[in-house]
Length: 78
Image (cartoon, rainbow, N blue to C red):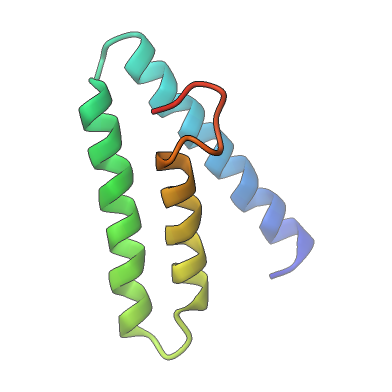
């Protein structure tokens, strides 16, 4: 990936993570639902990695999502 694509991906991740945290804090969704959303996203990438010849990007995406689930990417844990 080039730097522009990486920056777009990081921006999208930050926006989505902020939205999930905001939804949780405003009680639009519960913490369990936020966790389920992230777990589903990670599982989708893990499954996609097995379906393509080079699934490295999907594996990396799953690891990032799992890192967020573990509370390592946010000041406020999900």
